[in-house]
Structure formats: structure tokens, C-alpha cells
Image (cartoon, rainbow, N blue to C red; front, side, top):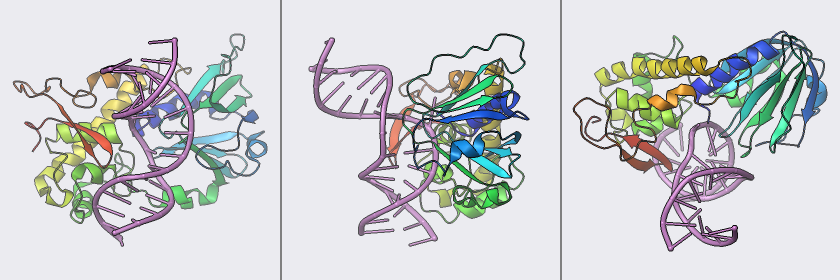
Length: 283
DNA sequence: CCAGGAACCTGTACGC
DNA sequence: TGCGTACAGGTTCCTG
């Protein structure tokens, strides 16, 4: 479920419950997700105060006052939900434990954060905060698509060397970090670029339009997620209301959203993943 | 190094 | 109701 906008939504939802609070108890209910949890993870988390909650690409990073950082990836099916009462105004109540609740944090403010991940493609790790940027999962990531270093000169340079479809190139986290299958499809539709085009064949002007389109589609989705974050309890990274405004993703056979375009959205498979597009509008 | 496919794992939707 | 199949928002690993 989570691409950059959903992870950012989760991060924002966790903040009121976790930031500046102490993990009074960490429950680790199995030895691993995609990989084994780090050695003594529960002990290293228990008693630690969260002093910053950051995001890099699709990773959430919680800096602790123990000089360590907790890294979390939600994989395909990971969720982090907040329950309880951080403000201490009401009785603390939590939902019953669910299947696949693999890690649970009880905070000293009464909040409970539950990490649930049926498919277990998610991951958690811990490392020294000083060396967080050097974590193997982070070092090869490309620039943040909403950051300053992601611009058309950079993207042109990276795409010009790739003999793969633009769809695959934009999914490559080494080129730009945070896009996933949904938002690549949506961005290519907005930029009117066919997902089948070779990355190296995308013209300079189209690359120039692609950069702001990528930024906009992600910003729109973050805004939609934010609007669905009614209160601190809804930190589950659902696609929020943005899923109701997809132009192409999941719309196979439906009519294109471009005014006066009667073409129906196609679904094809590219490197094992579904691509949705309008063959009339996207060239 | 590049490109493409399999693998990881569980749940759900759908056709028969 | 049950069974088999396809598919799912991600990423690494292996092969050529």
C-alpha cells in the first residue's frame, strides 16, 4: 500500500503519539519481517525517547535519545496504527490484538502504536543515528522527488542512459526515491507520456514537464492523505481520499478523464507489474 | 554495469 | 461452500 505520500501520511499521523514520548514497552512478537529484527530490538527500544520522526523515500526514521535510530519500511502491506489517548483526557482503550500485529509500542503518554503486516515484506532495523545515512538500505537511493536536487537537468541525465521503458526507470529508486506503481502511472498520464517509451528517448521538453508533474501528483496525494488524517488515530497510511481521484490506476476499461477523449484506459504488464494508461493521450 | 524475471508472503476477488 | 488462479501499493537477488 505505501508509496511516498502514504508513508509521509503515516509519519505525520505518528508524530502526535510518538514525538517526544518514551517507548515504555516494545513488544516484538516474531523474530523477523523480511529480514531478522536487529539484535535485542525490544530492549534497545524500551525506555528510549523519540526525539525526531523523519522520512527518507519510503522509510520512516525515528531518532531516539539513545543515539540510535529506528528504521521502518512498510513493504506492501504494512500499517502502523495509533490507538489510545496521548493527551490523557480519556480512559486508555486499545483494540484487541489482530493477526499479524508483529510489533507494538506502548508509549508513556498512553498511546499504542501497532505495526501490522500480513505479507511481511516490511522491515525494521536499528543503527547509530550518526551513521543513519550510511545504512545499506538508504545509500543507493536517488534524490527525494520533492527536494531541490530533483530537477530536469538531473532527470534528463539519468534517463538518457537507460534503455528501459520510462515506466520502469521511474520505478527505479536509484533514479528517484519514493515513486511506486500508482504514482508513476498517474504522473505519466499527467505528463502525457506513454509508459512504453524508452527512457532515453524522452525529449528534453517532456522531461521538463515530468518533474513538476511528479511533484504535483505526490503533493496532491499527501494533501489528500492529510485531509483523511482526521485525528491521531488514523495513522494507517490508507490511500486516503486520493484513491478516488486516480486518473488511470485501477481504471482498466473505464473512459479516459481527458475532456472529449472517449478512449478507455488500458492495462498492460511491464516487468511483472500492471501499468495503466490512455493510449490516445499518452504518446 | 544494465535489463528482466523470480522470489519473498498472505489475503482477497473471481470463475467454475 | 470449495478450489484453483490471478493479482496486490515493494525491494532484493539472481541470471544472462
